[in-house]
View 1: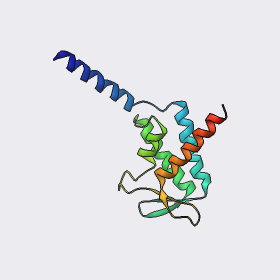
View 2: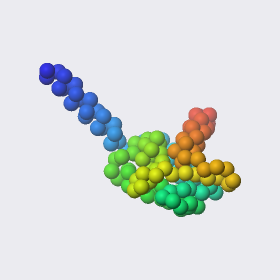
View 3: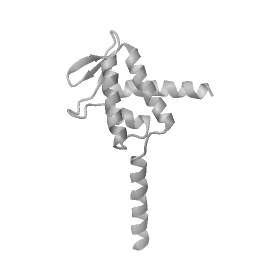
View 4: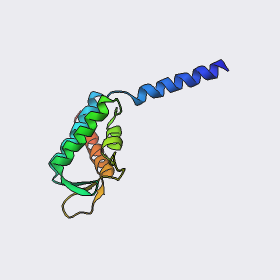
Length: 126
């Protein structure tokens, strides 16, 4: 019985440690890129029933990111997208991005696409 309890305790400690890790320098660079990409995109960002210009949206996501970092709730770029950039933490409604005359898309998908492009470019430049 004690070995099982010890194993469960160790697993909980490990998962707790992983869930509350600070972003690595690589993750910080990726998140900064994503926020900068949104800011420079010229796209509109929909949250809580209103459309915002990209610069205002980037400021909002930056504030949410800082809040999460202070509480050790974001360790990866994927955490940032899921916890800060996908939906309103107040209403739970998903965020959307609309670029030009294109149909709006979920912000999570839009940012994940850009994150994949960024990572590919980073690997190619090494």
